[in-house]
Length: 123
Image (cartoon, rainbow, N blue to C red):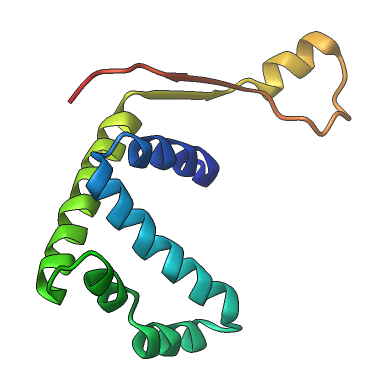
């Protein structure tokens, strides 16, 4: 599955979370993203995670114990993953490049054509 498509669907799922879950999740992810931007390597990123502990910062910010924050993040991630899997099961993604190029008689064109459909089912 296309990583850009998964990112778009994930963002929509996150937007649909209950306000408190959304706020906690986005807080942690924002802190992690800031650390990632400051790191040159994956090793440096891991060291920054240990040093700055976004989860501990989030726990303090939201007045939760570290354990409560970790459990909450696991619950939120489970919800996101479950909804993402459900949506991806209902995706139709068909490449039409060859058939459209044949019709247009232009084989030099570097553009690719796709048909994309997301059949919504509530879960």
